[in-house]
Length: 433
Image (cartoon, rainbow, N blue to C red):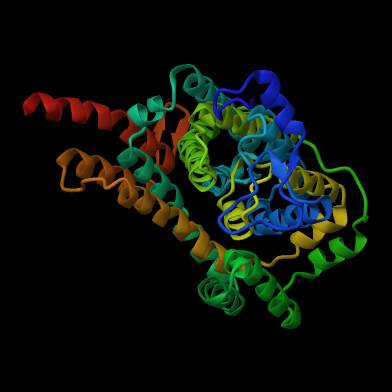
C-alpha cells in the first residue's frame, strides 16, 4: 500500500527525486488529469517540455545580469545548479526553476559604484539569511512567516523595491527613445494579445524585437559587436568571489522579504494546481533558494528565486513532472559554457533595456499592490495606512541617510522602517483600544 502524500518516508521521498513513474501510456494526458511531480511522460516529450521551461525562464533570467552587468553565462550556470539543488532538497515534490530574481536589480544597481565583489557580498548575505528563514520555518512551521511579515508589510516592501528603480528605467529609456518605444510596444502587444505561451514570453519577445530594430537602425555599439565576433563558442564561465561592505549588505537584505513571498507563493500555487498538500515543504523550498542564492553570490552570479513563468508552462501543459525541470537545469548548465552566448546577450542596447525595465520595474511595484488586494489588506486601518505610506515614500523618494560611515538608501530605510514600525504601532493601537 502506498503511503499518504505528506507522510511518506525519507527513503520514499528521496527515491521520488530521482525516479518517475510513467503517466498512463506516456503520450497522452486524460481530461481533468495532470502529470504529477513524481510522474513523467515519455522521455522525448519530457525533454521537449523541459526545453519549454528553458525558453520560459530565459527572458527574465538573462535580463537581470544584462541590466546589472553581471556575467550572463555565470548567472546561467548557477541558475541551473540552483534548480538541481532545489529539486533534491524538496525531495522532488515541488517542480520549480530557480532563475534570476528581479528583486536584486535594485540593490545591485544602487551599489554599482562599490564594485562587483561588494555586490556579490550583498547577494551572499541575502542568501544566508534566506537559508536561516527556511530553517526556522522548517522547525516552527509556515505560520511564522505570517506572524513576522503580514501582507501589509510584504506588499509595501515589494512595491517600494520596484518603484525605487523608476528613475533608472526612465534614464535608459531616454538614452535611445525610439528603440525603447519599439521595445515597449512589442512587449505590451505580445503580453496583451499573444496567444498561450507567447503571452507569457512578452518580455523576451519585446527584447528580441527591440534588438532587431536596433541592429537595423545602427543602435548597437560597435565594440559590443566586435566582442561578439571575437568570443569563443566554448569556454568556462567567469567566476568571482565576494567581499562584504556593510552598506551593500544592508541594501540587499530587504530582498529576502520578496524571496520569501515568492517561494511561499510558488509552493501554494503548485499545491493548488496538483491537489497535494505541500505546506511541509515550505521551509525546504526557502532553504534551497537561500542555498542557491548563496552559491551564486560566492561564484559571481545573481541571486535566484522560483519563477512564475514556469508555473505558466505547467498550467498550459498540465505537466508538473520534476523530470522536465532536471532537463531544464541541465540545458542551462550546458549553455553557460558558451562565451559566444554571453556576448550575444550583452549586445542588447540601453534603449532596449529601458523599454523592458519600464515595464518590469512597474510590474514589481504593482505586485506589491496585488499582495494587498489578494490578502484584502484594510487600508482604512490607521496602522496599515501610515506605515505603508511612510515606507513607500521613503523607497520611491530614495531617502538616503548615513549612520556613521554607512550610507543607506530608500529601499533599506523603507523596508527596515516598516518591519520595525508595524509591530510597534500595532501594539500601541491595540492598547489604546
